[in-house]
Image (cartoon, rainbow, N blue to C red; front, side, top):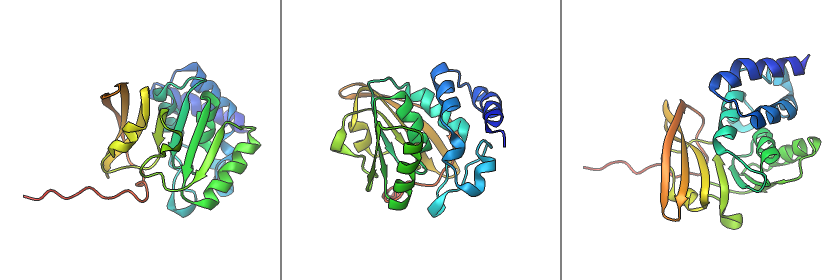
Length: 217
């Protein structure tokens, strides 16, 4: 298959139409080979506009959502990034190509091993995969200039915001299906945050996160 042609078509028909126009993001999406991160059985669909199934009932985000999140995070070369939910490592690779260091948390050891292999193939060495529970963040390397949570959350725990550096951005999918929204939170000062909802989506929930308490009259 002509993956380069399919990649260009994906960028023109999916990513650009979602207002992703940052030349750095478009360049990285062009350079990182998405087809090498997807399950072999789905390689012919590597650039399709759908959430691709991977192991354990998990899914890769759509290409346009991956690119939009990269643009919203506004990563710089000196930034330290936290990713919750590594999956195949594709988004990890994109983050690493734009930032200084990425710490990605994956609670499935087999997925973590596969992701590490994918990153080595792409010659990416500024991303570290940690096997563990990231449902309460990862304070070991905090604060972070950017945090990206790939599973949805019914409510966003404050601990994630607290692990942001001042000026840092957090992207999280908040809500319960089908009413979920991609939320961007910026820590403008030590005790001040700005929040905005960017678009609607629906993805599987982040594992280990406690359900919100029911309202009691």
